[in-house]
Image (cartoon, rainbow, N blue to C red; front, top):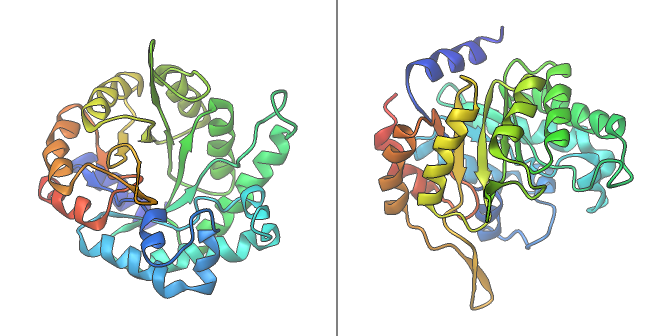
Length: 298
């Protein structure tokens, strides 16, 4: 086993792990236009990507997430870069690895492919599997320790991504879904319960499971969701990465209301609910993670 992966597993069994926060919103503060392909900055503007990783590392984060959320050929095609999967993902992993050093582990980030699988869509499982496997292989080549599959809604797609990452050689895979409130409780956009969502990725071989992002979920909602995830996780460690509140449009810009102090106050509640890894998603900043760091002794 990769020695860094072995150390991660040992640390996870011994203490809670502090993840990092949002990448996209931080890059936008550095000049990335909304809707632009942030993954291209791994090659075109690497210093800005380094700055985000450095800020999270210096905030005390144990995990640095690569700037590759939209790094499949399907998503990159929308930016004219479908042929650059290997280049952009290797570069993204190398940037995070450079800043992580021996102080943090690198999560190779894989988001949804952006479409629908057959029969709801026109993309086959084999095609999507090849896309996920190519991305995962490039991330591992670049130095990612762990593959993070995140913001999933469809358990079939999530399970494909987990299997593809394992087939590419990943020794540890984290899989997370985005949940929203419904009259029936927490559900993914596809209407899947936390129990069914986690069962799909556990069967596919995920080592850590949980949730990130989430539509209109407060930190209190996320604490309740965490307890539900822990029950459904079948003994797997649980990761939670909430948004910094729901996004609001203020003077033409997206704003998030939940402060670093609120994140810090919520951290012990997430841990008490059973989470083993806690980080942030949309709108969270290095300040949010630094505020939580006191609850995550090394």
